[in-house]
Figure (cartoon, protein in one colour):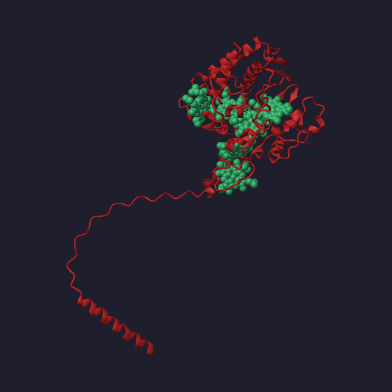
Length: 367
Ligand code: HEC
Ligand code: HEC
Ligand code: HEC
Ligand code: HEC
Ligand code: HEC
Ligand code: HEC
């Protein structure tokens, strides 16, 4: 009760103060006209898509997305482990019960590094032991190249496609050469040459001691990089390593795994015209501006010169074989360039400028 009374008297005092103030103010006039509307505010910045939202995951992990990936991979030669070669199949000397087939003349466990799943994975992990056979090896499958995501923050870190490796690749034949091709590093772990361009020991001659003399395996990576050709001086100069337009603007995966045109692209890993037209609008074949025709012509011209000079000899199958023994160094260099461009297999498309320079200068040096 007491408190209530106190409160009442406080309110009264407060009211009288307010009253006094009101009465001392001048009396307000009539309301003015409405002001004009202000300009619209600028739109706010759009919110960032939820990078880890399940929609992003499902877009790639749904059955409907996986079906074409699986079916296109079946078309790829990577998925077929029976490659016809010599009297047997590739499987005979690198696959299945390899220990039992050691009598096979083609058997060599070192091939597993690039021709089997176990060898590829062990090599990435640094646990591949040369010369030692596996009890059993499998062909290349999804889990050979893919493992698990290193990040789920694709927005910030870029997409890793759950690839087993994104690391730069140190070439096995020369550990001073390190190539970094992003997601294509998966490819160049295998698509790298076995040997580099010949080196002059000062005698201006060179001895060829093997019928397989050449880059041997996948020369595509060194070709794209513009290195390991035998750079004979001539009327064309050589671009700096790593500066080719297809190296800086495209990649193994962008040209070979683009959207399908016709049983190509995606996981067939065969080059697709759809990739070319993103840059060469209007291209109707890989022979953009007739460049493939020009370079194939130069390659044939070089081959004929190499036969004339006696470093190549026609064989019984309509092809040509290298002539082993000691040859002038320049001739061996020209031979190397012919072999390098043939091994690359792209008819110059990987690096048109480097290919043209190697061919032109080699032909000049032999004429
Ligand atoms: C651009 C395609 C793509 C996107 C987007 C994607 N993934 Fe994957 N993910 C893959 C591939 C490729 C693999 C490996 C091959 C396979 O397992 O099918 C994989 C594998 C996985 C695996 C199996 C790894 C293991 O250890 O077994 C999990 C789990 C996974 N992803 C979760 C996710 C989640 C969660 C998201 C969303 C945040 C996501 N993925 C988004 C492509 C993708
Ligand atoms: C550094 C990785 C690597 C190693 C090691 C390797 N290969 Fe290969 N091999 C490749 C690549 C890449 C290709 C495909 C090259 C191409 O198409 O230009 C290939 C292609 C082949 C082909 C041709 C297949 C065809 O259908 O045209 C044969 C045969 C072959 N290799 C046998 C061997 C043998 C035998 C060994 C062991 C002595 C071996 N390879 C070691 C990477 C390798
Ligand atoms: C020889 C290596 C290799 C094999 C084998 C392989 N992939 Fe891939 N895959 C890649 C690479 C490299 C990329 C990244 C492509 C890029 O950079 O755009 C990729 C991307 C993907 C993607 C995301 C792009 C897309 O097309 O949706 C999926 C999903 C995928 N792979 C699933 C699979 C599945 C399933 C298999 C087995 C059927 C498989 N991969 C086999 C190398 C491989
Ligand atoms: C595990 C080693 C390995 C990896 C990884 C690999 N390749 Fe190959 N690739 C080979 C071998 C070996 C051959 C030849 C034998 C064969 O066809 O299986 C080959 C053949 C090819 C061919 C010609 C045969 C065909 O199917 O048309 C192309 C093109 C090719 N690879 C592109 C790629 C691209 C692009 C990548 C990366 C996305 C890649 N490869 C990753 C080992 C590999
Ligand atoms: C500019 C696009 C482009 C880039 C980048 C590219 N390729 Fe190619 N590649 C092609 C084309 C086009 C062909 C086929 C040319 C032809 O048919 O004459 C080809 C041919 C090949 C072949 C021979 C195929 C066969 O059937 O013999 C292999 C193997 C190959 N590429 C692997 C690779 C690898 C590995 C990389 C990355 C180091 C790469 N390519 C980068 C477009 C490209
Ligand atoms: C990311 C862009 C890009 C892609 C994809 C691409 N190229 Fe190119 N290409 C170039 C550039 C840039 C040049 C250099 C053009 C110049 O110097 O005039 C070039 C040059 C060429 C040349 C020699 C120069 C000429 O115009 O005659 C050929 C041939 C060629 N590309 C073919 C192809 C083929 C085939 C494909 C698809 C397998 C392809 N390119 C994919 C960008 C690309």
